[in-house]
Image (cartoon, rainbow, N blue to C red; front, side, top):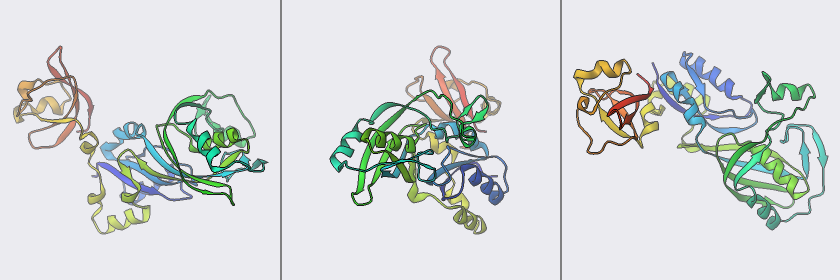
Length: 300
């Protein structure tokens, strides 16, 4: 039974759900979940949670992300990328300095209008389903955080800008590029998108589905599975004495007297809890008022 996270390189043409379906077939397991939708045309890092690690999906989805994208100036489409229908074309007269200046406006918090071609649900229906029916409905702007935008390359001849974007959760990169194009006055659409990092998961370590299948055949996939507890390695580690294993196996609170080694300081910070055999149990928080460790998330 596998429990952990695998760094998948999502290839072009697959949806995130396709990746999960393929992984279920490769691993012969049902309990698998992805950590954030990537458009079918997009590529890159997609951490996939397996077994008990599916409890981590929300936590990983909330991690900061890094993308490399190409903005094609002078074109506006209904999908905000080059797969959609062209709504308008415009002459591009802006230069690199002006592009850089406009991009700076988006660093920090900004209110982004979710695109119609997205998986957000309104009234039980996904927006892209309504968009395909030719409908456009009112959407609320959402606060997103753009930590940085860097221009990596600019082709004046092709009117294409390659950028690196560091952002928080819930950011639509094609909408960001669309908004930049609109502010420049010439319009813009996303030509390509590559997600290079999600939290500590980086593209250099990501495996394609074909590579994962090969690792399974070679019986070495375990070497590429990130253990659940490593996601919490910034938290202090505590071990519960064997005499009190029943408490943690049943998800009950315990006190410092139940630990094999007692920390010098007891704060309200969260800790990684293990049994005496070094098996990871879950995340607990110390309640300073009741002087007890209380469960936050269990993985046993």
